[in-house]
Image 1 (cartoon, rainbow, N blue to C red):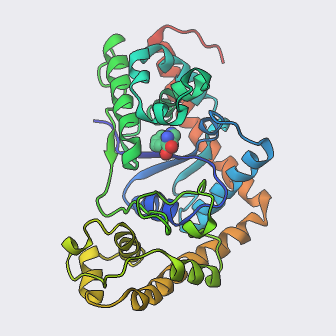
Image 2 (image 1 turned 90 degrees about the horizontal axis):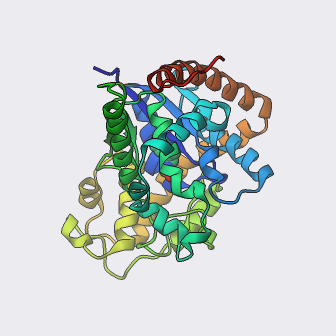
Image 3 (image 1 turned 180 degrees about the vertical axis):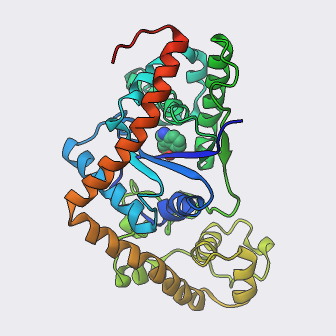
Amino acid sequence: MHKKRVFSGVQPTGNLHLGNYLGAMKKFVSLQDEFECIYCIVDLHAITNKQDPEELRKNVLETIASFIAVGLDPVKNIIFNQASVSAHSELAWVFNCVARIGWMNRMTQFKEKAGINKENASVGLLVYPNLMAADILLYKATHVPVGEDQKQHLELTRDIAKKFNNDFKSENYFPIVEPLISKEIPRVMSLRDGKKKMSKSEDSDQSRINLKDSKDLINQKIKKAKTDNNSIPSDINGLKNRHEASNLISIYASVNNIKVSEVLNEFGGKNFSTFKSKLVESVVEKICPIGEKITKLLKDENNLNEILENGVKNADLIATKHLKEIYKILGLTKFT
Ligand code: TRP
């Protein structure tokens, strides 16, 4: 009934790493052949936490450069920043009035991010999922590629869509979105602790591979990555409770587009030093060209701004049309 359309949002961050690439961006690239895709840099979500203004501006540009460097086509897809399309904020307000306080209080991400001092968290952090629902539903997106950690927010998006459609007797106005969660996507973990996600907020730079790392640095980080004393198993059961080993193996599988079982077939019985050399080769081959492209793209800010502006124009066209329909459904007068 609704046209298939993919939407996803990514926080503007500088210094994207292998986890961002293998966990999200690689999937975005593969979706562009099959779907109409809209990718949004969610700068308004970013300010739910304190941001340095100059950093924020730079990070939006760096994120768009990274999108292009990994192979997203800015002509085929709509790539833009959230703050440029004001309908996102407007629809988020509407959803603040649709969603219930109880729904927000149940969000685990809010609880985690707010920490013990909930009273001191920004109101924006609490209603963050409503803005996310607005992002998606403003384009009537049907499919959203997200990680496990965002599943609950997607459930909320579905609840908001259902309640709106129902309350305003607009059956089927908003589609009920489907998450696109693929099993092959690895959760890339820290190189120093296989139980922690690879993250840019981790103090040690040794814990992650940044897209802009040099060949030598990648080599050094992987060689030093934590493993255990056993050799590589020949089947998946042998990876149980071996978090660091599992992580390196699933990185190898993902970078080479093969299954974990195939990696184990190839390396079963061998020691980690042999495997690590191969892993370095594969990661360098995949990541270094991307890093070089990001650096090159960042040298021409005008070009990046042009790409962004073009995406904004296309996003705004769809967003404005839908927002008008939504306001009409609600009985809100809007002269512009
Ligand atoms: N909350 C998402 C995250 O932190 C980012 C996001 C914002 C998003 N709006 C979105 C993801 C819409 C998918 C669809 O990863």
